[in-house]
Image 1 (tube, rainbow, N blue to C red):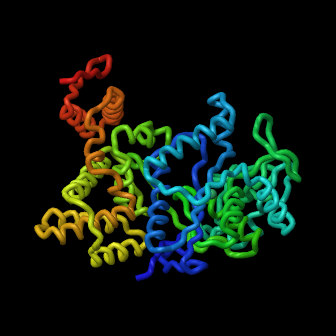
Image 2: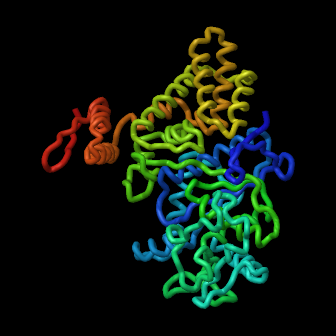
Image 3: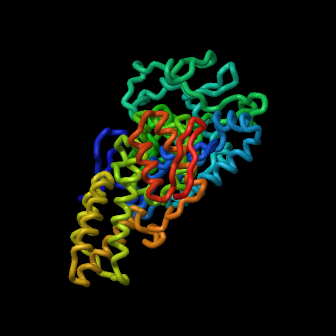
Length: 456
Ligand SMILES: [Zn+2]
């Protein structure tokens, strides 16, 4: 069976046929760097990490580009709020992101372009769009893309141009000729970062960044474009419009989108609480537990986050590590049948839940096997296939010892999590956290002034 992906552009699973045999060119929209990463970001990044790992496992030569958006409204706003320079903010946030991604074991992209390094290319693309009549310089000083000059607009998000209601999504702007039009270049406002351009001082709009960074690093036509679910419209729709109008050719062949991550049924956002920030999760959980949790659902499914599912992920991963820990030495021989089954499920749009169930079959075979040669074969296969998903990469002993003794900070963190659960009247979770602390020798005392703790 050949590798198949669900292509958002055609709304169906398709055989993957790269433009150049044996090679894959892939662009993923990365982070807008104004704050630390939360689990929602990790979910999108993990989906494409698994894709890259699997493509490499299948012997494709992968060129993976993931950008950094380092100029944007949110960045400017946050820098003002924090009273720090934009450069300091983005530098700090990029370092924090790289640390989080390294913890999660995300493979580094081949190229990680930053938007501010591509301004000349953006200006050039915008000039070309104006020349071709797809863009115009408005009286207000901004440059807009004229959506109705691209009749295929809406082909990714399945929207008809005439049904689009700009009111909800795109802020009305007096200087636009059509409310559907989107900004390519914004004229400079006092105190904002800006660059020289044929239209005066200004800065690029967000969408144009990705078109230019993908063109310059992968060419005008490439294989896969990916991103989180909230990017499909309007960001990716706009990328297609401006890229295809600029080049006159098809942009990306396959569009892949990860599913939503929700907390208690709502989209994960920073205002919903700190416990979803990766750095906080890393205090209580081995990073591979978070990876396991994310790959235990199909990348396109909608995933609802709660503490309980992370705990389940921890026990499941512990079972795999236990099987691995029971092995002595290393072998070379692989269980070909399991290898084939693994490829079969992964070829089917990266079905990681099915792939994990194969890992558990292998763990069971290890535990039940009395023949040392067979056991070695299962163990070697388990290690090999887990590696394709980025799992079982740590020493079992180190994994088991993770969080064995809680620091004061970790205890406070658990108490804070319990308080959140209590505030939300989720007493089941609150009790579980208290019980788990009790098991680790930490006794909680609730009073009107809050919760204190002591070691038993
Ligand atoms: Zn993008």
